[in-house]
Image (cartoon, rainbow, N blue to C red):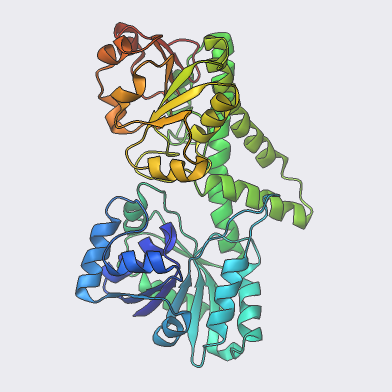
Length: 435
């Protein structure tokens, strides 16, 4: 099938290379000259395991082509995926400018029947608005149908999640169009749910926001565990044996980050307010999430007697392992708090350091190091922020001897308390006052 994918971010690029790999003829579009040059050279503009290899292979077979023209992509394709960014405004509502601009460009080029698919995460009602914009731009209503086909990929495992989905959601008001899109996914071994536009749009938000609530729930219990002397890992294990609850997303930590959960919780809250519904449950989950990192920073501050004149070592900067994404990364909160109070930062991340440099600029209070071992040198406290595998295998006994103070805060419960204490550290983690 001839397919266009507009946008080459995490969703767009992964969608394009996977569909091309499955035998479709895919043209993917971006308007950024630097990204286009990389893509044409087989270089992925995003860090995502496996994507660059698949990009190179699909370019080599000719199944994937790169373009800067929405008009070209529209004319050449039967199905057009819109996978552009939907960032948040300051009030949490979703900025739909990119989606609507692309819809306008597509609409001006539709001369024969097309299926236009919203792949980006968008507020409820977007499908109908895109249909209106397509017509306003010149497309005849009989020449298109609009479908909502939300993605459920996770950064760091996006390729696997796209190749092996739990489910595929197709929201359409026209059964024939839904059947046509389902043909694209016939090689994928998973349930396909066909539903209405609005239901599909809401399924995406409902799924992500449920996970956000679940994370905040266990993080709230981590706070109680610290007070009463329990261990939140045992609490989570005990809960997880109940198959009504399950074990996933019960790992206490520093709260959610990245491009999905922060944006989607705020987006659904904004949409709910517009609809006249006060979503207090989700509001509380956001509050718990924001408080979690503040509480963790305060524990470090208290242990050090303040940050002024202290050096804090950060192991990890990305919001999670296997990505260079620093959107809503907890490392940025720690850096801001420490440096604002007269402290210094030493840090290392395998792939995200350039993004942090771009975010905070070059200064003399944040030192980027070549390894975790280098980070620890002359630090007053070491903080595990991102649970990269390399940080789990370091020689912590040797590291402890290079520090001013042998204090370690594990923000991800990724290290063995007994091993850290044996290495000479005074060890602290989330959901337990001591290891």
